[in-house]
Length: 342
Ligand code: SF4
Image (tube, rainbow, N blue to C red; front, side, top):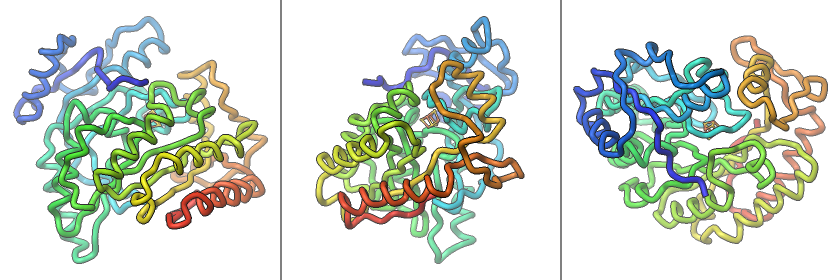
């Protein structure tokens, strides 16, 4: 059982203390007896404990920065939402294929932003521009927001904020099962709570530091019981020996545990494993012992964003994935909607 995240080290930006949440978190971490350091900006964090890259990287992933979000211009977030809403960046998990390794580069520590009201105000503007069409905000583009929320309750506030909004919708995805504080949030059906799932083999070998499949499924059942629209992202779909059996077992478990009323408005997203050349280099540095298959010659090359090509499965393999996993979903959850495969 993965315990809820507790940082080993906390940095506080002085400006964060101008906000109620900043003060509250400082007091909380003092009471928890966690080492606290002051920093004028997270960019100044250079002297993290550790003798080499491997140790410093791990320390950074146990470090929480309490800061202020300066950029209130939101990135777009296709295909699952219109905008990415920034409540936090970074993650305490150690998934070998995590995209944050390349996007966060040398700053893998976790940051939580305390100017939540200002972030809501910015969201309000985006909603106004698109009204009366709904605007969907994705809260997990740069972090696993649920993984840190038992400490900050920012996500809980956001769920209630969008619950009251006329045109806003919130969505996020998590690999963590620490959802109890979110069960009584007044979501009004405006938040789609998604869990990222994978078969036991993949979680065991490639997703250290995250909740196990059974824990995620138990949490999903609780979330369904709390009346949230529910979804699952099967990602990254990774072909290992016995993958068809592994994924079948995953869907069987899901089908056995999920209450029947959760199946009517259920979504699935499917994302195959992919990597870029820069990502491969970082993965080999951060997780040198990984069993992850990163052989370009076995993959198909595909144009990616910003001109960086990515390596995906071959066309035949992709068809096989779609048929096999799509088939399981149709069989076990005939009422669910498959949103996309990418
Ligand atoms: S849980 Fe998600 S964000 Fe965290 S390390 Fe794993 S893939 Fe990355």
